[in-house]
Length: 582
Image 1 (cartoon, rainbow, N blue to C red):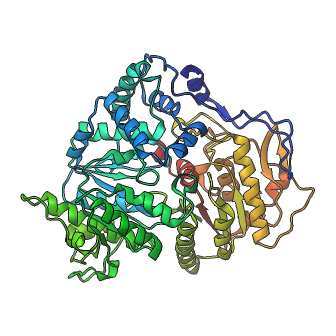
Image 2 (cartoon, rainbow, N blue to C red):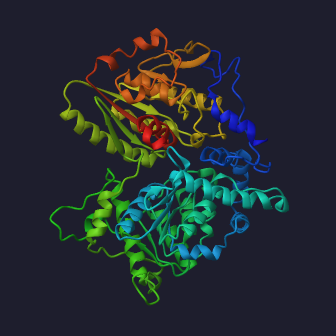
Image 3 (spheres, rainbow, N blue to C red):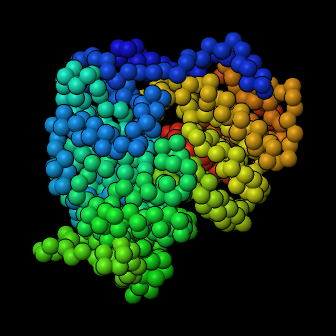
């Protein structure tokens, strides 16, 4: 498929017209396009103007499709195949694996909290005056957020410059390599390494994508230190269906004689991590509780990220930075921690954090994780929780934060849930955890920013069809109704108006919208001026649906929890914080 049609499609995207959707899910008169499969082996055209959006649209042609995911699953028993392919792509891009040693890497994996741990770590080292590189995923609004220099997303000009340098080298050599091009995440990993080397960072904080052993970031040979955050069940089709199997995958980032730290884990996965460390010859230490760190200051230790679950992430970040600084500031060969002599596992000592460490923990910001935004009478609580464990942490945070605000609020408060989840996640289990929050409305929508909009290529996803996304939303709506003891009306159908799916008939305050902007505008009822941009057109909601929003128009305050997917949170932030998209 040539790129020209893709770029043109980027300029105008519509949620396809759909006929009435019966609850049986037998979609009728559906004109939605099938899953768009873009081959990475087709030649991309030469651009006269290689601008940022051109680069992102070209990048999107590398998005991993279902066939590529199946290949990952088939090869998971042979990690050398995946890592060998990654080394080949790296070499074709003009880089050598040995060059990555110069990045002084901190490599972090985990199921929950690895991104927050990296954010704490990067902020602390930046406070010491080091030039930092930070590679993370996914992005919320713009893809360049994944590659950060000194805490800021790489600029559009630099992203575009480095993108075409890497892409053109790979494209020029693909014919001699069977037409192969790296998939989306592999390409971005190569791009991040290239950018960090070109920008001469002092340290690169690298967050693993999925797992560890077979992740493309694991071509790193000699990281300075490795970390493992809290483990849980996620990506089971790739990593395994038990937490022990997942722990084995995560422990794959261990390297001989490279210190590694883990937060406290359940007995099963901790045993697996210990065994992996012993097999590899990696000194593994368990982080202390955050409260065990000594502080001579009067003020208690403060974190820039909300939630009790951030305490273990902060402790891990302290150990990672402490270990890295010890090596950086030492002229001698770093001593191997005593964990090697203790069967591969020991307790990491608590120490007194330096003022720069304390300031780094307090100054850390990580959008979309336990984030609160206040727009007049409306308060948004945003958290990208997408596993049952992270959702429980989200519920704990939201319950405390919302209750505190409601105690201080003047007038009545309505609680609204805006939810979506993707992939193989157990949506019903996550929704069950949210029931005790006592929402007045539960709203569901796919991760589509706008139903009718000029395309933002940064947030395009070619891996899931619109039909599948809307089906998932209707399933989530039904799960919510069942969890709240509400019986389904067998004749209920999705209401359609003006040729587009607008909103599901409300039954006990549950609704489904076709896009994030439609959902946000209905929830806020014109009370958030940031969402009232006249250039963003939406088909009017039917009067019968609008009438159901009377409580939202009459209440003094609205509290909205947006959760279930980082992609959903990112789409919401695009509208709520327009500067992030500029």
